[in-house]
Structures are given as C-alpha cells and as structure tokens.
Length: 295
Image (cartoon, rainbow, N blue to C red; front, side):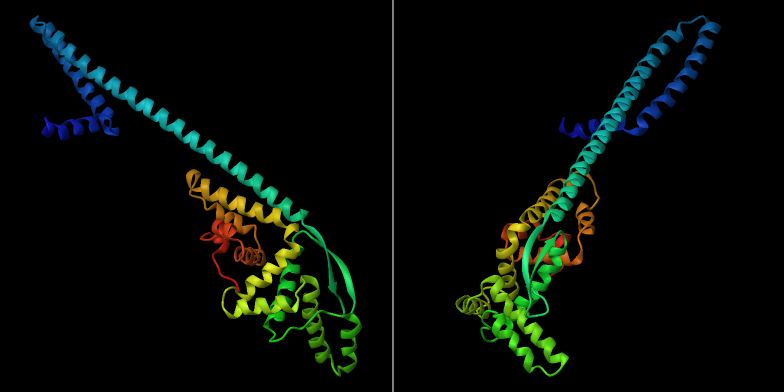
C-alpha cells in the first residue's frame, strides 16, 4: 500500500491543480459530442446506448463541478488572506506614523537653560529648544574632549583671574587660542570636574576601561539627560516596534524610512548615547540607524 501513495498523491495534486478544471471541462465537451453521437445511434438503431453513456457523462460533470467549486472557494480564501495582509500592513503603518509624530513632538518639547561663556569672560544664560540641543551637545562635547586631552588638570574657570590673560595676548590668533582655552576650562564649572574626578577619568582612559568619548558623553548626559530622556525612549520604542513587526507585514525597510527622518548629526548623537546605555545599544545595534561608527 505504501508504494501506491505517490500515485494517490499525484492524482490528488492534479485534481487540485490549475489545469485540472480546464482538462475536465474539455473532457466534458468531448463527452457531450459523444452523447449526441450516441443519441444519433440510439434513434437510428432503436437501442438504449445513450442512457449508459449519459450516466457516465453525469459522473464526469459532477467531478468537474466539484473541482470548479473548490477552485472558486480557494480563490475566495486567497482573496480574504490578501485583504487581511493589507489590513495588517495598514494598521502597522498607522501605528508607526503615529509614533513618528510623537517622536517629533518629543524633539520639540526639549527645553532647558544653560550658562555658557560668550565673548569671554562674559557668562550668559541661554535657552536650548528642540533640535538645537544636538548642536549644543556637539559644541560641549568638543570642549570636553579637549579638556581630557590635556596632560594636566586645568582647574575651574574664574572670571576675575582668567580674564586678565587677554592683556597679554598680542594678536587675534593668540586671543582665539585663549578663547578656546577658557571655553575648555569652563567645562569644569559646567560638569563639576574636580581634580580627583579628572584623575579618575584619565586613569580609566589610560587603562582602556572607557573611551574618551564615553566619559565626555556620560558627563553631558548626567548634566542634561533628564531634558531629553523622553526623546531617547521614543527612538528606542520606534526601532523596537519596527524590528518586531516590520518584516511580518511588508518587504519595505521601515528602518530606512525612519533613518530618513534623522540627520547625520542626530545619528551620531544616538551612537554616543548607545556607547553608555546597553539597553539602548541592544535595540539599535545591527540596524541602519547605527550602520556607521562615529568617534
């Protein structure tokens, strides 16, 4: 009996194939011709040939009808499945674009006050709004990086003392260099870098326990992170949502679409945050959002 299974399967596959209904319809057509011929013989020779033939033909026609009914139902099921897939993709995209709207809302809600040096030794209060915090972050991180590139502790900025240095600068280049020096020194005031902390961070860099980038961004995040935490959580939520559902509903690379909303500087900023936040890094690593490495 096992040897017969392949033949049964072949017959079953043929009956359920696209060509089976057409083949049976053609066969029915030829059988109909046969009926007419048999009817002709029956009338001519007064024999009951047509009754037997008609019974056989009815069996074939019943089989053909059954196959046509199956094919109709199968097309209907496939149509319902297609509609379900389209509806599923539409629901996914609706949720995704709602999340993207919230992503922009979180960026626009970022707002905090900061004190910076402007035309040293003048200290001014500024308000950081929306996406401008990215530019602010890069400026601060650049000064922090220079601070830790020094071989010695610069100390805190003191306007009453440090401003006197301008009296000894003889040209614009020296003044520009002194400006950068004061901005860098001011990082100790902004981020609370004591000599003890400076030595600790330098030791971690030396032993390769942490990179200079990680330390600089860590200090920035500790100072300002509370102001943009909701934005970071929204980025993580969107990426996780796309990774969990995107492949199920479409071949469209929704992560590429999301990346299109993110500037190159923002992408670099997200990489900086991933360097100190393991959960954030786990969500974004391996995606096009962090397809480049920034230092």
